[in-house]
Picture 1 (cartoon, rainbow, N blue to C red):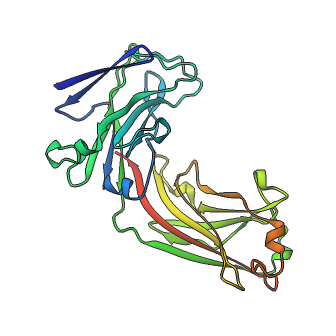
Picture 2: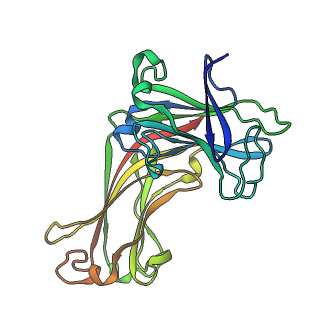
Amino acid sequence: MASNPVSTTQDGIAVARSISDGPPTHYMVKIQLFSLLLKNSVEKYESGDFEAGSYKWRLVLYPSGNKSRNVKDYISLYLAIADTDSRNAAEKERRFRGLRNQWGFDQFLPLRTFNDVASGYPVDDTCVFGAEVYVTKEMSTGKGESLSMIKDASSSKHIWRIENFSKMDLECYDSQTFFAGDNKWKIQMYPKGRHHGLGSHISLYLALADPIAVPSSSKILAEFTLRMVDQMQGRHISGKVSYWLSESSPENGWAKYVTFGYFNLPGNGCLVKDVCVVEAEVTVLGITNAI
């Protein structure tokens, strides 16, 4: 049963929204410790893909509003088609085609309303978002996923001392593995550069040491810093980012981390007596699993 139906118009197409007494039945995203998404400035969350009508879809959530559309103080929620070759798929009330592969609500729910204890949306800082997708002649069972944010997440550090740097002649080198959260990680260095940094920069990445061990339905939100230590004056080169890593996307970092010229410049402390020191600091903020 649904109540308080709301109708809006987007590009001339009517879009209906309602509040239901029960949870969504097709695909749902359960988020534990939702407040940590805001605390850790997670701007966007994309669910895993789910199928309806032989097409793949995903939910796209902006916990504090879609900044690219100048939205703030609202939760923004969209349904997007994940099959880029299937944008002519017909959904019951609107079509996904051309460059418009996403529909939804910029102002889905005011954060003030969402955070009101009496609203019942979050219970013990846990909430559920979902979608019911009906494609022509489609009937499907429900599936979902759970995003568990980690309260008081602790960081792990790993220092990698690289000796005989000038003799590194392979494309890529890996540090020893180390733990952060429940996963093994490693630092990857491309001394001759990679991608758009090839031939001009040292490339540096954080990677899952054993991505095959991560379930295909899981994603790991990691906040990490990679530092190249200044061994003389303590003015380290540092890069920090938050990124969702998974079996299909097991690494993230910088193809243009530092130029060859700066790295080799005497007095900068990056290379001292043919030794380079790299440090990784990793904090696992959340994990997504299928339910």
